[in-house]
Image (cartoon, rainbow, N blue to C red):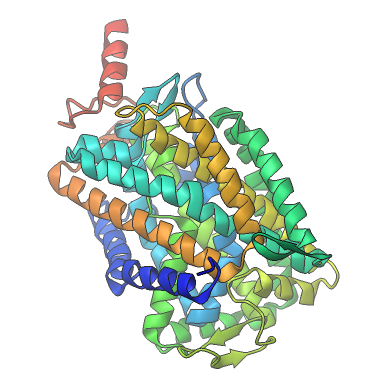
Length: 506
């Protein structure tokens, strides 16, 4: 049985059918609504505070700044999902799927606050730098180590192997479409274009240089690249909108109308909107807390608020920019439930909805001769920085496991495995890569969302932290403090030491 054959693809599809059942779709939405109500819609109330906090705080020898942590998490959020993922949501769920991406982003911002604040509260110091994430807070707040180990293993598999293949695949496809396939070469992985081989090799070489340099090098790279590319992409989208301003009201009406009586069925719009929304903004998936835990902040809630804002940047800005460009220019098809059935066909039937092609066709129609290459370059940086974020997340979970089991050369083998996965994903077909990526996202989302809900019912640490932060903010303090003992939050060892050290100093 060949790895790219029907049987393997069918197995991947069947696994996704179980993981991404309606139960996960509505759990993501339900958890977001639940935490929005509990925090009294913190994503609206403290919006100005979120923006202010982005530019406060300094890095230290052990941690990065709030902005650097935001850049690392955004590098994970802003990636293929913002370009190819939005196209897939429209291609399989109809224009109404965009509305459900907005809904999951708005509600998911509160989930992002909760999980990222937990990441800060229960972080540890490993070999001179802060480490944290769901595995750490599941063990400490839930007291269930096997569950924490299960999340760590799922995350290493997802972020170290499965998800990087999606990002690399999108880079290879975008470059191939923009600059041509070149010579076709027979390899052990099948017949592959020389363009994809050279692109894959280049990505692997650059990746190796950066990930062997550690978190500080990753943070330094992403804090420059992510804001620049996101801003450039949004500017291009704004130009497209301005040139077609007369079509914007019609597009908004199409999105809203199709969200509740969609051409592909309500279930398809919600399902694809939530699936691609979670894939893109990662709220509830458990990736954001890893970067959040690495930040040097005065109070855990501060980084939770910064990470909540990153969901807005990802979905409400970057994903919306992609969606409006595609829908304004009509550069999309909508696939029906049955194979080969098109509900809407504006492009050739062979155009892959799981690729950046919709977006490239959209920009190319406005900027002939430039659009396809621009998307290829933007996607390269978006996807590449996402791969860097995935490495850091996988490394953090390896570090967590090494507390219990010593594995010689564990970090080296992780780096090598990811570089192999990136090259493999860069030359394989998009559908298979996305299927594998969806398995990774779904596994992490299930384990993390169930975990943070259980933690809430056990101790409510993230809610206590928010109330404490708002109380200090109301008093107008010049320097925030966090005393987990006073808040009856147990096992926040690092914060207890920091608070005790500050008290003894005074």
